Length: 573
Image (cartoon, rainbow, N blue to C red; front, side, top):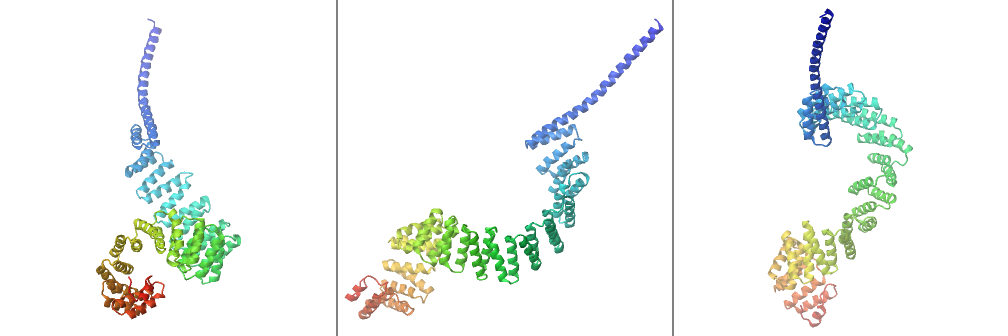
């Protein structure tokens, strides 16, 4: 073998060993890299799957997948962030904070990680900690100044007023004067009893936005609420020079002049405001309602304002209603009724209006025909209102339409959930059923009243009198009329009722005594005088009886038998 061949061969062998060694070494390195890459791929896969379920709001699956992603890559800041978000939703706040902190440690330049941590701390009521997170984020990251508003709110919630003011100042340095920031600063200054600074903020706002009347109104209201009415006047008058139709300015000036006792100026500005259709009708109504509650004070003012309201809102039912309420309050019932009727022409859905209308017509004006008409109209709109059925029934009863009255009053009683109304229904039903000669139902109704109100004068009187007329349960009628007299010993009508019950019982001397007392107390109806004559006849005093019958003859409520009694000098019953 040649030396050259040996050398060549040796070199070849060496190269083989070197290549083999290199291949072996390269294979081991690739194994390590493959494992790391596999972990990264696994982490990415689990994170992507977790994100999918997160979007679908399946947070349990999402959480499990994000946790598996962390097992493959513990330094995955995004997975920590997502886990923190889910745990925060679930209220597992301590664990959420751990993951939020981990996300920030791994990536301190992601604003969403700061926001998540701040949210968790806020949920834990660690407002100071949350504020520090915001401070850190805003100082560290660009374009996060928007979160100064959240930071200011956190300081305000902690009543860290100076820091809140400082934060609002930073906002103004960034964005300029903002009305909502100025208003927030004013509230803080007022809470700190620093009126001067609050006023300065208001003045600055007016200077920055000279055409905005709302800012003038806001400053004026601040002056007024702090007893500085006079300071508000120049601002308000200045506003009216620019905006003559500003009703809020007129109202505030009216309030100031009212406080100063200058009624003429107050009325002038209040009238100007109320004439303006641009002033919210609801506000006008609230103001007038307040003045109505204070009557008789400001009566002329209320009259003027309600007229002005009708001028500026001629098609609004509420304007007619408030006029009616005012007139009703000053006992001008007939005029009030007319305005209520006008309001119904524009809106018939206000039940209170119908109730006021019916109450006036029934109780004050006693116009039963109108009550029947309007209650029937109201029942078409409000078929389940007991009070409307009551008024309908009571009006029919007054007109002696007993069948209609019985139906409506029974409906009212059935629908009523008011004890007093139920009592009145039974009172009227007692009379109506008596008129229908349904005496058992009449007695049931009266008894229901006496069960609820044993001292009801009206029922004690009518019930005992009707029993006497029917000559039924006379001893019980005597008990009722006796109780009535115990409660009202000098009432002429009740004395006559008791006397008539005694008459029906044949106790004529006692009957005479009570009927004479009734006449002494002023009873002068034909019915009472005729009763007196009947008693005298029963006692054998025929001449005196005829004299009393002759007196009764010229009276409206004497019986149909009065002429026959006189002519025959005989008692007819």
